[in-house]
Amino acid sequence: MANSAAINPTAEQQASRNISRIRTLRACIEKNLARGKTEKVAQLQSELNRRMAAVAALKAELDSL
Amino acid sequence: MAAGDITYFDQWLVDVQEALHDHETDTFKLGLITSGVTPAATTSDPRWGAGGGTNLSSSQVTPGGNYSSGGPTMANPTVTLTGGAGVFDADDVSIAQHASNPNNARWGIIYNDTDTGKRAVGFVDLGATIDLTAGTFSVAWNASGIASMNQA
Image (cartoon, rainbow over all chains, first blue to last red):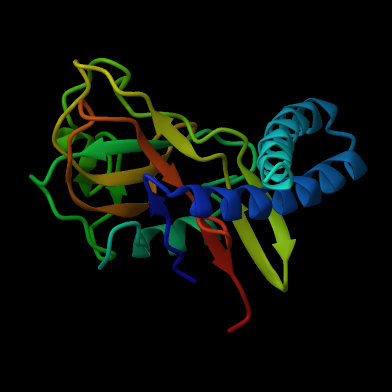
């Protein structure tokens, strides 16, 4: 049950975390949409967009190599 | 324990079953404390304030700079069913460098700021005393979230 966090995460740890958080945010948005909780959905969507942008920026950087 | 390890308070296991936390709608914070106290799973009724068995806020680092009293909010808490487990997660926490930040953070206390009693969930081992004046302090939660509960 116990999980471990990353203190001052490396870029690799942050990238991995972004992907896992995108997964939970999507799942939670879907759940709250079904429940009609629009305010919560908007908050989560904002964070999802931020994480997606971070991952996209990393992908673009990789693609440019 | 190693840096980043999260330990849940035994009392939290009881509090959850008594519906004292709503992990998706309540506000959770990460309060930083000094090495003046060593939290343990068995810490008696741990809280961020009076009213329980242990007031962890009495060991809080001195607020200043980008660290406000009580600690940063763990925004956007979520509870999802992931791989057969109920997962509590939230946005990561980051405190930007500032000359007036505290310089002696040793443990991070996850607690419920919505709860009147400000009951604590668990604590994060920072691994060593951390000087927040020296650089940005960040905590990225685990890929499996802050806490997960499963059938095992």
